[in-house]
Amino acid sequence: MKKKILIIFGTRPEAIKMAPLINKFLGDSRFETKVCVTGQHKEMLNQVLSFFNIIPDFDLSLMKPNQNLYNLTAEVLEGLKPILESFKPDFVFVHGDTTTSMAASIAAFYAKSKVCHVEAGLRTNNLLSPFPEEMNRQVTSRIASYHFAPTSKAQQNLLKENVVKETILVTGNTVIDALLESSLKVVDLENEEIISIKKTIPFKNKIILVTGHRRENHGQGFLNICEALKKIAIQNPDVEIVYPVHLNPNVLEPVNTLLGGVKNIHLLQPLSYPTFVWLMKLSYLIITDSGGVQEEAPSLGKPVLVMRDTTERPEAVEVGTVILVGTNTKKIIQETQELLDNSVKYNSMNSLHNPYGDGKACERIIDFISNL
Ligand code: UD1
Ligand code: UDP
Image (cartoon, rainbow, N blue to C red):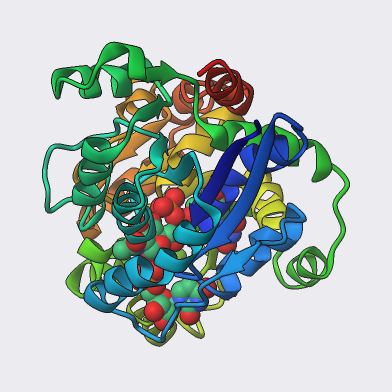
């Protein structure tokens, strides 16, 4: 009998990181695979589904403007019940640390399916940072039967929590599978986004690419970030700050209000994944609080300033690609200026590293499941 696989996700980064796994499972006749999106994200999720040609079998379409954690959690649980009860999957795959992942794990547990956690074992061990993601991934680890850890550090974190060794597999991060697959496709990419970007941004100048969305940075954190970006732009008229702004209103509003109209700051809509990869490749420096971008940048040899006080991804800090700057205005300005002016420091941060994977994570996951 074929093993029944249900892959559940809801946000942009989960979609990017699950896409190569979905396509591999769908192409493998040993499995009956179905895809369920909660729709925690909408436009930003649809962009990814469309690039990777994924058509979900189930879509809960949950996103509401400025949604809160209570209703989202409850609606994921309720919405998954009939799907789990009718399909009866043997294995439910969830990813990482979002509310979708945590609530889907609980739902799968109630349905007595085995939970398989992709990107397992990342930890800051501070439940409030990142919030609520640290809680989400710790809860998912308690429920999961199988843990696909991207690195040996992540495996160690799970072993410290007494997770049984044989249930953990170190795979590399599936984001590198997605990145390597997409990197090839973006070499000569020309799409509407790129045509419009090329028209408005002078690429002869150094490009600083910015993204940000973390809940713990909402409010004062984003005010500090915007103040820093504005000062950097004014101090460096020959530098272009390119910022595809996350659609969360807690991000959109301060960013548009404080940074709109600055000549060398380019506020864009969220970009499709291939366009974003294309832009990362052309950037001089990346400033972000994103988890996924921290993992992709070392593979592209791009220095990253991370606007957080802690990271569950210490590997890139150790190889020297990432510096933590928090949301301290002065520190963001100072580290950025140094990387713009000091080529020795810049060159010490821009070598290629692959601490997060070799592009074969999905293959390893599927081999593991097929042997159960
Ligand atoms: C979520 C995840 C976070 C992940 C991030 C990736 C939780 C609690 N948060 O944060 O872990 O790192 O996604 O981006 O799971 N919105 C849109 N269109 C979209 C997406 C979002 O309009 O396509 C707006 C909506 O108003 C929505 C709001 O953003 O209510 C917040 O979305 P939500 O998923 O709750 O939080 P994120 O900040 O996106
Ligand atoms: N990304 C994208 N378009 C953008 C910005 C980011 O496709 O405009 C990709 C990026 O390459 C990475 C992922 O989205 O793979 C990161 O998503 P996000 O920062 O929203 O979430 P996190 O990784 O912090 O959970």
